[in-house]
Each structure stands twice: as structure tokens, then as C-alpha cells.
Length: 277
Length: 321
Image: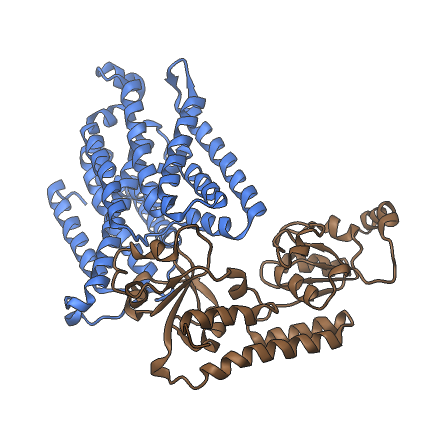
């Protein structure tokens, strides 16, 4: 393996370029967004094919998909640091560590951990000040909505079912970012008692829990209501009766731990309490 | 074990009835028995009923398809998805997702994919209007592998949504939302099972060997073609509502052969009932074990089916030896 690296470094030495600006590779859409938000766009030399935000990320060199990055490609880009998430990327991380490439794993399950990740990434990339400002801005945006919803009494809170996928029916339980977003937006995640961040969920349980709002966290051309109203037995769910089924919040805003979380929160709040701005 | 067939059928009928009642009473939404029939619980009860009907349909359809393919291909490993239907349906569904087709049309996409793959397998396997069992099996396996690799390829290119769709395709689900679709699918499945039952005697003969069947005056090629098309139609229809549910079509027919023997007149009805009980039972486990989290049904059928089958097989060997 080391011979291969040696060979590659000889072959690719001419394109290594400026030695003093650090070179970063981001293997996860979330870390890509964070790096861009810290103003490090120019120093990113490679991203995964899932990295779609900001638009400039699409122009970056692809080093493979989310769970299958190409190690050769990564090595050839001579990164000083690689940023990724732990989930499906564990096998890759093992290999990167074996190759002694600096790797930072960001796996925040909620906003507090997200702030910590951003601070650490800022530390690694010597953007401590920018990271501090970003975190302060995010905290401010989140607090602006949290302060509106904090005083809503439990009985007046909107019951929300977040549908991550339809077949099989999947939702987000306790310990997921989405669960926290719903709570911060003043809602009650009806699947909050499920102690798993993401899981298959019972359709009849949804009927029994009678959510007042259903958020579909996936794209479809059809209007959201049309996708669920025909479901057998679902006709009497409050959200469907009141036509409060939505699929127009970008799923990335609700599922990705990124600086855009506050935007996702704002969109969620609009859906749960329209006209309360 | 040597009960008269009608008595056995009655026992199975009673067991199925018990499974249905148990399935109606159990579920993620905990409703006390005495409140189950109240109007406010009507929706939940209806949903359970639809699932149970789907389970019965899937169980009997897949197991009878399995019986037919095992008999005419004379291969104990034959199962309903042998002819590439599953990967055809999966591929078509994944492509539909990537193209941004609304999920309302997903069952149609799956059905068309399944039918297309059967036609492809048939075309590849046929040689001068004759189809050799072995080339049919081989073509089925090869088409399955080729389609599966295209699915994985597409998933690695297009990511998230395609991956979800593949998941559904791999492990199946009895979470059905659309009662009209279940009704629509039940038509070809029930008619298919009925038609297969009419061919029970021919199956008995073909199972012995094509020459023997020809001696008995059976046009084996024709019967085989008809039966393969019927099983394909049953499987393709079922894939629309539940994705792929492994093991039922493979294991339950073998289990029932251990119990009632290889006469298809007896085997087909007994297997239908047994497979229905099996599926309703597996579905109850899948939706109640970790409720409200559901476990993919395919996982349950495999985990329960395998050990039960091994016990029956060992017992059968003991009796024979």
C-alpha cells in the first residue's frame, strides 16, 4: 500500500500546487456545508457526489459517493484533513486512519453537538473566529424562534408526524435532529417516545396518535396531501382533515446537521404556527 | 400424521381463523379488546383487516407459485422470484424514483418491471419454441444478478431516495395503504391459484418426468408454459403491494410436502392455508414485537421459516430412515 502511495505521490506531485494553503476534502454533505460557511470554499479540493450545497460545492472534484469514496482519488488530492460523518462511513474512516490521513468525524445528533462540531472544525481549520461568529448567529436564529414557542403550554402544542419515507413508513424519533427541530418549533413529535433516531413506524399507530400536521421529508411532484389522503384508514387523521400535510420544506434543511438548521427550524415553525411571525 | 385430508383442512381453517382474530386484536395502537369495535377505533381495525387480507393473499399466492415452479422445474430450490421478477420490479421502481415519477405510480412501475423481466427470461431461455428447465433457471438467475447489479449501480449514483426504494424492494412490507390496489391484485392471484388447482393432476404427472407425462397424454410444453405464465402473473401482481417477501414460496411448500405428501390435489389447498397462517403470524410479530417500530416482514419470515423447516426436514428424514 505504501508503495502505491509513493507511486501516486510521484505521479500527482506536479498538481499538488501551493503547499502552504491547507487542502480539505469533505465526504459528507453536512461537513461540506460547514466548511463553506466558515469561508473555506477555496480550500476544499474534493467532495462526495452527495454534496449539493452551496451550489459551488457541485463544481468541486468528486471523490466518490457518500458511503464509497475512492481512496486513490482522495490520496491523489493530497488532503491535509478529511471531514466526514460516522454513520455509513466507518469502514472508510478505518482505511483513512490506516493511511495516516488526518480525519475528523462529525456526527452531531442535535444542535448542541452541532455547535461543538463547528467549533472543532473551526479549530482544525484555524477559523476559530469565524466558527464563533457562525455559532453565535445560529444560536441567535434558533433562540428567536425558541423564545416564541417556549411559552406555548403542552396542550396547545401542535402534534407532528414527520414522515421520512413512505414504504416502509419511516419516521424520526428521540435523538434525531428532526425531533429537536419539531420540539424547538413548538410542536410535539408524535414519535418522540421511540428511542431510535430513525426507524420504521406503524401506520396504525399514526392513526391512533392523530397528528395535526404531517411533514413529508422527501420530494415528490404530487401535492403532499394527495400522497397521503388516499391511505386506507388515514382519512380521519386531523392533519388530513385540516389539509395540513406538507412536503415543501427541503429535506436537507431538516435532516442535515448544518448551519442551515435554523432555516429548517424557521420553515417548520411557519408550518406549525402559520401567521404567528 | 395420517389424518384424512378434509379433517386436516378444517384444523388449518380453525388455526387461520384464530390467527386472523389474534391479528385483529393486536397492533401498535394499544386498544383494549372491549373497545375494539367502537366507532372511533374503526379506522385502526380496518387497517389491520386490510393487512391481514394482504398477508393471506401474499402467503397463498407465493406458496402456490412456489409449488408449481418446484414441480415443473423439478428443482427443490425453485421459488416464485426465480424467474427474475423481483429484480425486474426492483429495478423498474428504482428507475421510476430516479426519474422523479410520483410514488402514486410505483406499483404500476414494479408490475411492469416484473412482467418485462419474465418476458426477457423467457425469450433468452427459449430455443426453437422449446424451453429447457435448466436454461430457464439459469436465465432467471443471470437476469436477476444483472438487474441487481444495475440497481446497486443506480443507487450508488443517485443516492438516498433510490436507496430507500431498494430497501423496500429487498425486504418487502405488508404495510398497504391502498385497498383498491389490494382488491385489484387479489383478482389475478385468486384466479391464478384456482387455475393452478385445475392443473393439479397434470402437475403430479409432470413432477414424475416429462416423458411419463407425455405418455399420459399431457402436452407438457403447453401446460408448462401456461403454468409458468400464471405463476409469473401472480408474483408480479403481489410484488406491487408488498415488494419481495422471501422464504414463504420456498419453505412452506416443502413443509407441507413433509406433511401431506406430493399429491398436488391435497398439497395446494393445504399449502394455501398453511402459508396464510404463516404470513398472518409473521406479520403480527413484525408489527407488535418492537411496536411502534416495525420490523421488515422478510426478516421475520426467514428467521422463523428456517428453523421450523429444519426441524420438519430432520423429522422427515428420521421417519424415512
